[in-house]
Length: 192
Image (cartoon, rainbow, N blue to C red):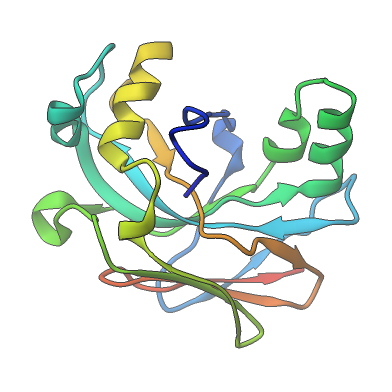
């Protein structure tokens, strides 16, 4: 969900396709604790899936590029991300790895509409850790699509994880993480 846009523009990073881990609704799916880390963090996010691509997409037309929405988790090897950042090196190794992007099913815009408000939350073992409203996003989905399309050509099938509320935090093996967004089925993983 970001920081104050009067101070800094949104920033983006990429994850490889093998980062995707599909999580079916009404299931608790095993999520592997990754290698190379001792500080593994969660970030619940609204995900926008694109139905067409382009460059320099105007904000007022950006939502026309959205096929649908899903619930997602942006998982981070926080210790690696911080170490690389402190070294002034790319911190992709902390964000871009196998199964680092659990995602629920994509629901089409004609079924769920565009998510401009609604509760977004994450709990670990039944204890709420993140809780906010999508209306609090510093950069809307439309603004993110527009800004991202200035730097990279977007393509049908691209998915954009749109940011997280405050209070990201660690998980360990055995933890059950439940993600919710009003209007979408819960996404639940167990860290194994």
